[in-house]
Image (cartoon, rainbow, N blue to C red; front, side):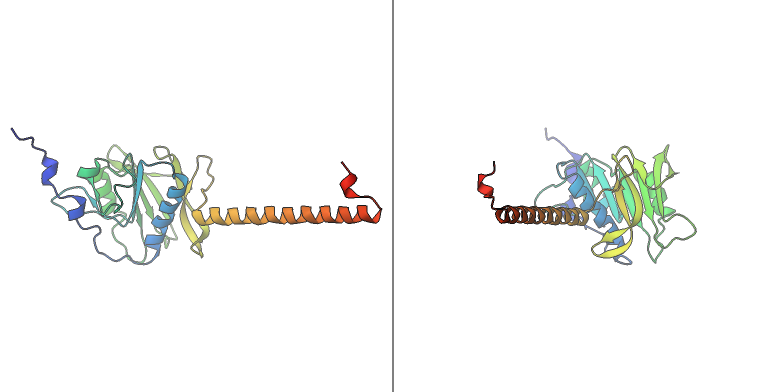
Length: 240
């Protein structure tokens, strides 16, 4: 008797489109999730049980089109599936829902506050839904929702702590790829912002320059001391 596995009849990630082919409104929709992803890649460099997708299709039903958040985070999955990486995120292959979905609203309103919000809550059951609308003025640009009994409840604070992830998410002005503006960042439990890869490099370069300066100053002091001793007729080699 043949062993029947219904998963074998479903399309694989290689057979499904990797995005919805809808162009983003501007660079911010790619840069913000990209910043969050690169920071995670540095902070969680020794972890292999997470994946952060940027503008990647999530397939939740073989009969329906993918949903494509600007960014999403999954825990408890392989960080890399193979050398070709993921083409899309297929739930019947991954067997793990994303824990967080991110939508960045720019010039064109794309139903992030109603239809998408309802879909992530009711259809998928994603624990955290993050909406960032940088052009908002009367309300906070960043809203972080947590799923409670099938409904999203708005969380307060900036940053907002996400205990299941072990990180907080928040907004503040900074520099990324040479661009000065407000960005979204990860934070630790004490509310300290995690440094981006660029900031880590800059910090290391500044530390190296400082140590080099100290070395040069120390050598100059030794040279001056030797010169003074020689002027006094004292051979520095005879000093213990």
